[in-house]
Image (cartoon, rainbow, N blue to C red; front, side):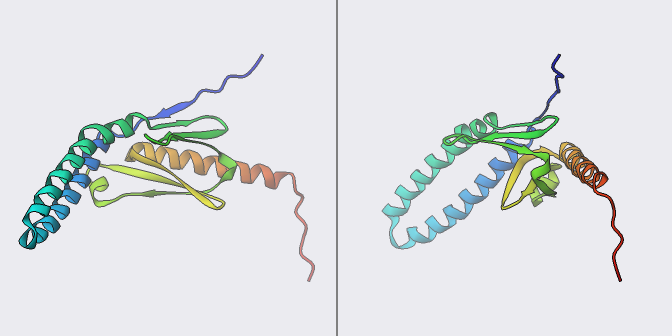
Length: 167
């Protein structure tokens, strides 16, 4: 009989869309200031650029950002972490716990306000990021990974007899 392991699905924070919309709005304001300065010398070009910028902003805020977060998946299982994200290009990563060297929680200013974080998994030669999870889930993920890493290190050290150093 096969032993069945349960998986834990990590949900993206409900504030993730709001944080990305605020980021997009800040970029829109910065771009609008640049377009205003261009408008001093070339008003027609600035009107066209402004309308184009507004269209891109609406597409991002209304369609792409929510679609990105609906395509995001993070599952923790007994032996690995499954990450699937992307909208145009969907990437899937299956990360074994023994491949993770260490784990870092990071927060921007907006993430601190909304109590959201990103979990950075440091692997040999690469980094995988679990974005926009609640701070509670982030701490839970980090504790689980650190527990798995320390458990694997202890089990590796049990099989090797300790040899005293020669002086």
